[in-house]
Image 1 (cartoon, rainbow, N blue to C red):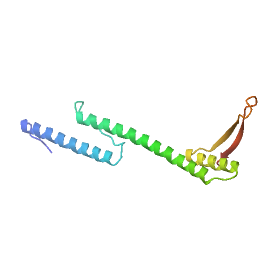
Image 2: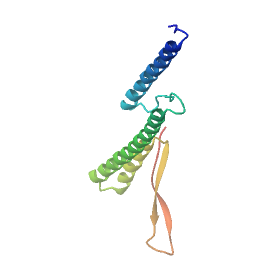
Image 3: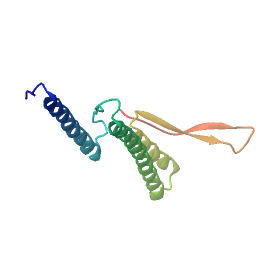
Image 4: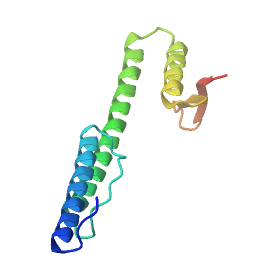
Length: 136
């Protein structure tokens, strides 16, 4: 759209710039509301207090979301380990095998081991391999 080259045209251009900025800001806010914290956003200017505040809010929400995801992941993993131990077995080695297999799956690693510290005799401290797991 071509604007007249007078004061009215300048006002129309400024109004168009504001409306476009509000649309862009609305899209950004909607995406943040959906949990899309990677939505790009550029404030309208260096003086755009609201735009900079929205970027700060997004970054704070993203950080809080990541912390919550890690907390939930750890809580879920601990609950799985508790369930394994509660289900119990009379064979200690079998229990260690189940625990290490769960840990390997949970951490998405290819191998892991559990070592046991024997400290019955302070003059004879040593460790012993309790269980290991390796994926193919």
